[in-house]
Each structure stands twice: as structure tokens, then as C-alpha cells.
Amino acid sequence: MFATDDTIVAIATPAGRGALGVIRLSGPGALDLAGALLACGAALQPRHATLTRVTSNDGAGAVDEVVATFFPAPHSYTGEHVVEITGHGSPVLLQAMLKRAIVSGARLAEPGEFTLRSFLNGKRDLVQSEAVADLIDAATPLQARIAFDQLEGTLTERIAVIDSKLFDLIVRLEASLDFPDEGFHFIEPARAAADIDEVIAALDNLLTGARAGRMIREGAMVVIAGRTNVGKSSIFNELAGTQRAIVTPIPGTTRDLVTENVNIGGIEVTLVDTAGWRETLDVVESEGVSRGSRARRIADLVLLVLDSSEPLTDADEQLLGETASINRIVVSNKTDLRRHRSIAEPSFELPASVPVSALTGDGFDKLRHAVTDALVGEERLRDAAPISNARHITLLERCRVSLVTARDAATAANVPEEFLLTDLQASRACLDEIVGRRTSEDVLRHIFERFCIGK
Image (cartoon, rainbow, N blue to C red; front, side):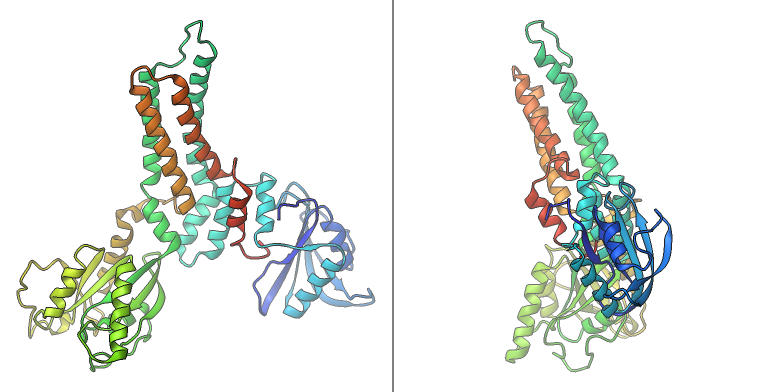
């Protein structure tokens, strides 16, 4: 996977038919291999689009009209010679070009190998490389914005500032250790502790948006729960924007989990409709109720639906009690009927709820805002939530632990400077691992294997 002395090739556009299809070559032999495919040979001008044809196997005719572009090293995506051939999006034509390139000496690229070569050749760091995959996978505009911010280097810059402060502190401590007999101290313990506190504060500021960033990047699971006939499926359909779940006046209509992926406030939400909670002897419905209970336990957020046109039932109160300690929103449905009847006073204080009408659509804008706030809080209102990757968050938290240990050592009496230096170097190693200055092959393989082929 880490060989960079050969030339790789892949189809860079999705499988299936399309108006255009792209073949990408990268490596020392990219130009020569392109010459074996194209009627113009290897006579491609750097960074100029050349209209030409792909020749047949025997070279006697043409099979497609294409546009070829040559990007010479190091001014290319991978830092190597790159040739991109854009033709018609027929899978037959693209596969034929791919096979001819392989027969001519190219190797079929592994998933993410173009971006891996870009990283290995210093074109972008590991954070930016991971952002490439996130940008491709983005399902909401907010996901795309955060991924593009990281691709532009916003997170890299913030880490670089923290790393610079750590490096300066480490240099001063090492200088003090280099002159122990002369009694030189380039930094006093109190000053070192204060400087470490500044770095910790910078880390805390960076981690503030971590929960929101990770939720936006990875999505969330939102489960709609409640007793039978409170309108769960109607609310599900309204949030999903489609008649996905069956709605009838008959209790127990929903007997299994119904899911739909929706965009709520820029967050990719897996919305789950569950069977109405009630005691039942029906084996199928009972299994549906059990699945709903399990879904509530693992959900990022539960929408507990009550029927505002009827008094609270024992089932309502039991569900309110069971969900009191988890992340939830109480939704009072059927507000269009509240002029006739209202919820009776429960045996405990009823939490604040979001009133909606699944029949008229009233209140759903407020409900969507409530869902977004419950998932990411006010952090979503920041200009950017740069920390969104679990690997980055884990390493930053590990870095913080080492810094706290170093700060405590600096404020303690008679602690050798070597101990303080060891913790500071450990914290800096975490930052190096985030951007890829020191990362194992196993970590790189795990990161790049999730990329699509051709990128």
C-alpha cells in the first residue's frame, strides 16, 4: 500500500452511467501510459486541456473522444505526474481504458491511494487528508462546510499555534537542563506552570465544539416514542417529508422499527419510528414494543410524544419516568384538538413540551430547532466546529491529560525538570499524531481504507 515508485490508475467517477467519466493516472510513468492510450501520444502540455481520442487496441481507430489534462510533479494533487482523462461516462469505455492502462504497466489503485500519496509527498497533512473523505461523504451542507474548513487547514492552523507554544516551552526547559552546573534557568517553575495553563486553555477552547462537530460529522439517531395512537407515525412522516410510515386509527399499526435519513438543522439524522408502548399479548406487536425500548436506550435523542387532546395515561407517566434521565424532548401532539380537551394534571411535574399538530403542520419548525439544540446545543451557532473526528478528539484529550500532569509537576516542590519535560513531550507527540508527523502504518491504513477508489 505504501509503494510510491510505480504508477497507479483508477476510475475517479462513481460506478454507473453518466455524462462524463474520468480515468486518473498518477506516478512517474503517468505521461507515458497516457501516451499509449491517446491518439496524441504523450504530447500533452502541462495544465492544458487537450481534446484528443482514445485509440483502439490495435491503434487503427478511435473508441472515444476525450479531454486529457497533464499535471506535472510536484504541482498536482498527489505531488507526482498526474494525467486525468475525461470521456463519456459509459462503463464499457471506462473499463476498456482502465484495462489498457493496466496492461501497459499501471497498477490498479487501492482505496484512497491518490490521497495517501498526496500525504506522503507533503501536499497536505493527515487532518486535511481525512477531510477529503469527509467532504466526499458529506450528506448535509453543514457537514460539507466543516469538512472543507478542515481541508483548507483551519484545524491544522489552530493545532500549529498550540504546538508552537509547547515547542517554545520545551526548548527553554531543555536549555535549562543543558547548563545544570552553571545554574542557568531559562524558565522558572511558576512561569512554566502559567504557560502550560495557557496551552490547556487553548486546548479547551478547541475542544468546546467537539461534541457538536462529531455529531454533525457522524450524524445522530433520533427515536420517536410514546404509547399507541398519540401520532408518532404522523410526526415521523412530517419530519421525514414523506408518507414513509403507515398511519391508521387502529392502535398498534406500527409493529417494527421504521427508519428514514433526514437533514435536520444541518445534522444527518436517522429518524426511527417505534411501535406504540402498551401491554399486549400479540407476539408480533410485543416484539415491536421490545425493539422500541432497545432503540430508546441507544438513541442520541428521544422524542416522547403525548396526546394533548387526552388526559395522561399510566403508560404516558411510565414513559415519562423511564426517559427522565436521558436526552429527550417531550412533544405534545394534536394541538388542533386542545380546544376540546386538555392534558390532566399528572402525579408529578410535567416537563416543558413542544406543542405540534401533525394534522396541520403547526409547531414543526420549532420542533426541528429543538431537535438541533438538544443534539448540539448552542455550539452549532459558532462559525465553525473544527473538531469533528473521534481520532482528533481522543488525541487532544490525551494531550490535555499530559499537560495537566506537567502543570501539577511544575507547581509541586522539588520535582526535577526532566519529569516536567517528559510530560510536555508526550503532549506534543499527540499533536504530531493528529497532523501525521508521527503516525504508524496501521493508523494510516485504517484511515485511508475507508476512502473510495480513485481518490
